[in-house]
Length: 368
Image (cartoon, rainbow, N blue to C red; front, top):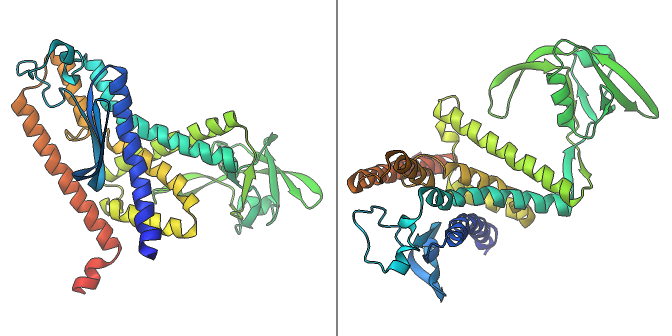
């Protein structure tokens, strides 16, 4: 029962929401452009539940790792091999729509994943406020500029260069952009307010990717305490947009570094790792799944834009080539590209699954 409650149910909830929003993007934009949607499915394989509503069959299927929206004319993009459609149906066929409309329909899935992340972050900020790291100093390093200037553990930094602060990351930003100029920190020490001038020095630290980088440092460490800032709806939306954009950039940079070989490929996780993490988060609180789902949704949206033929990004490349050439690619060319994309995706999934199992020491347990 514990496995079902803390692992299976959270995994299905998270994955179901990600897939639903992705396919909803395709569905809504297709409907907007007048395309007939024949099927809307969550999952693949045998149908578990099905209901016909209007002209669309809605279903939940056995294998939950994906979903699809089946549109009229989608399987027949070549004008020289048309389906046997009535004039009314031809107007509603996907392959008869202008290229830019088809690109919008295909791109809507990944974009809706980014929208989902924004909505989830917004919900968190509206209900719980904005969580920021306290500007209280938890440690002053030996022989650092901060120690030489007289900063002490427990000092609360309330301003830098005369600008009020409430977030530790703001301190880092000001210091790292200071160059060789002194930085003035306004600190609260007990009942006293002090202005302390510090000249940052160049040092090395590890970034979020584990790489050593040179940057300006003053030698202080946060207590790690978190404060909650009350926020209005518009401020929550603004902060959620920044948060979503930050994760988009972080995901793109991370993937770029992996393909450049700067970060080991075995750092990538797949469904097994997601299932494990959802279980661990759910055991603490189901609410922890909300920001986790937002981050995974960003990852899913970006990865689906990869130029691999079987993914949305690959289909967009086909459509851009059609726009450039003035005609669709030949049937055989597309078939070979789709097969290559399929095998590439299978190889990627097998590698990721191996990473997940290896991370859990499964092979060591099986083979010693």
